[in-house]
Image (cartoon, rainbow, N blue to C red):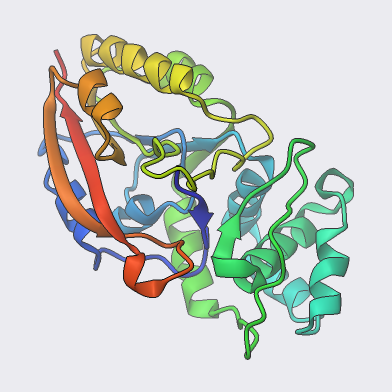
Length: 270
């Protein structure tokens, strides 16, 4: 499964092959953009839709986007007070998210994500961030222009905290374009990135997603799903249009091994 890697402040901005391929499936008609597992939001921010609903089950990520929507400069102000050091990293990591002021929590999310190993976002079963210090040579500085661009896109977005099933069943409507980017089915024995939230994402969750996709299609929604090019995925969505594309992986101990194949599944409205 894939991790959430660097969830904010450095989006692909439409330059990646994956984004270029995803854009091809956008409907020509007026629509609302819905992404219930927003993660890093690369497609969302690249499109800059003026009518959108984004959600996630990760409270820290939703807090970050919510604060960024309202007070981006306060995030930068809090962030700049922290030093660039391993000691500072572990001191921030030890804090409890639900005990923090929302602005401090948002700045902390960026600091940890930009200075941890490989930019991962992973938590343990208690919901605590547990990725180690990344040993970078230089600190990450927030790009204020990027903050402003993000705020501009987020201003027109409705932001929800919740499981993708709950969000879609309660809020998806006829005419929506829905993008689903779940934790990927692992393609190797060493791939284990299920703990993006304290709840893990199992094969049964992928099965439930496929069932929900059919329901959404019958609700007159267009849906695009991304996942690994895995037989299980191909079987789940065998009745739909499946496109396999080469891609680069964010995480691998060897740089030359950060390649693979992903599947883009297009499900038109029924």
